[in-house]
Image (cartoon, rainbow, N blue to C red; front, top):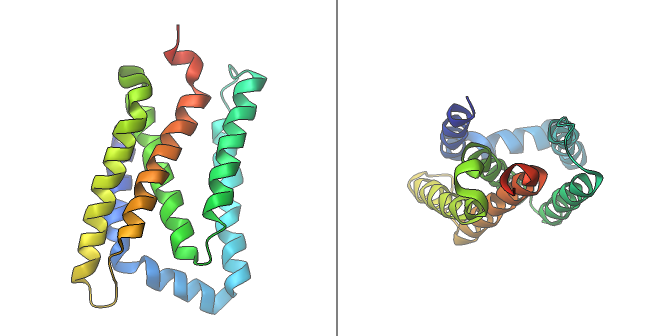
Length: 166
């Protein structure tokens, strides 16, 4: 089931090149910049709830997972443009999904696999944007894809560490 979610998320990332900027601009026009940011922030408590539903986490693992999550989000939300924030976060979800599928098999090598997948998908995404009349591909977004994917895999690895280390 998680493998299907991973493939669907990759398809979403690629297809978002066609409409995401317009949807974000529409939200900013209708709600204003602050309300749009608040709406984006509101999705993360739900993700944290999912992260902490596993009762086998120790307090230390929960604290470390929360710290990694908060540092990544703090970095993502420090960007001036909401598009860059969403780029880092959507690739963080990609890395988390990859790790959820492959951590048992790959262990901590999942970080490298996530970074490679993030680089591949974001490179393709940015290449597609060069062909669109209202979008521009950006090498910086490829870097955000790599960082975001590794961040998501790291969060998964830390939160599930007790499963991979005997």
